[in-house]
Image (cartoon, rainbow, N blue to C red; front, side, top):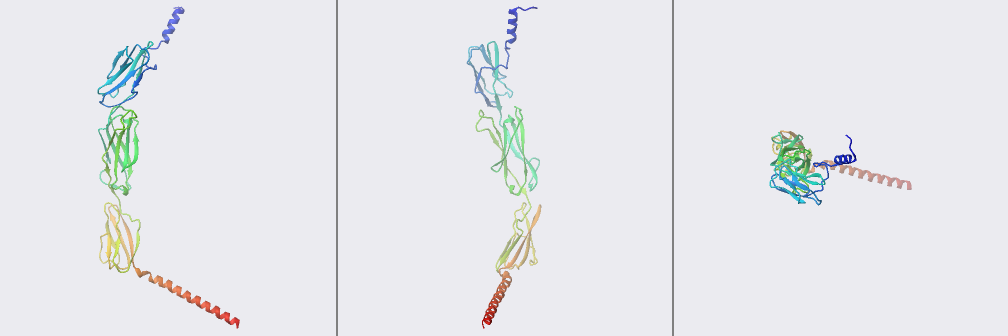
Length: 335
C-alpha cells in the first residue's frame, strides 16, 4: 500500500498522540493538603484542583471515588472512616486529548495496643558481670517504618532504634537492649517508649506509648576497697567497723588471737580490746572479702620517739664536745 502525503501526515499524528490513559504524563493538578496522615478509622478530606481548561476531572480510589466532573475545577475526595491500609487515591483529568493522573500520598497510622518491657527468658535477680537482654514488645502498630523505640535508664536516654520494614498493616515488633549487670544498677529502673514519628503533617507531639518501669535487682559479692586500717586508742572505747555493700547482705566473722569467742557483727566495739590485729571477713553466696584492723595504744609510738630523742641527745653531746676540743686546741696554739 502506497500512502500519499496526507496519509503519511495522518499516520505520524496518530503515532505521536499521547495515550488517553498515560499515567506518566505530568498532571497539572494540585492537592490541598499535599500529603495526608490519618489515624486508622478516622475521616479524611482532600481537594484536587486545576487552573487550566479541561474536559473532566475526578477521583479514583478504593474508597470515596468521585465520578468525573466537566464543569468544575475543584473536586473533593472524602471518607468518613478510612479503613483501607492499601488505599492509593488518584486525581485524574482529561485535557488536550490526554488523561493524566496524580497520586495522593496517604499514610494511615495506628498507635500500639500495648508496649511492655521484660527481661526475656531470664527470671529473678541478675548477677554482677553477667550479660542480659531487655525486650521492648510493641503490639499492633502501623506503619512500622515510622516507629522509633527509645530506651531510658532512669531519666537518661541510652538507645534509639528505628526500623526499615515497609509493611503498611499493623505488626508486632520487638526492640532489644543488651546490658551487663553492675552493682550500681541494683534498684535502677529501665523503661522504653514507642513513638510514631509521622512528619510535619502528622499529630504533634508524635503519639507515644511508654512502658511501666522495670526495676533491676542485681546480686553482687562484698568487696573492700581498703583492706587495711590502723586504729589508735588511749584506753577508751574502740570501734572496728567492717560493714560493706553486698547483695544478698553479707555475713561477718571476726578473727584475732585476742578474741575469746567468735563475733558475727559487722562492728566490733569494746573498751578491752588488746592491741594487735583483727581480721573481719564478709561473705555471701557470690564471694567473700576480708579486711584487717591493727589496734595500737596512743602511746604506742613512744618507743620510736624515744629512740629519735635519744639520737638527738647523743648528737647534741657530740657537737658540744667537738666545739670544746676545737677551742682547747686553739688556746694551746696561742700559748
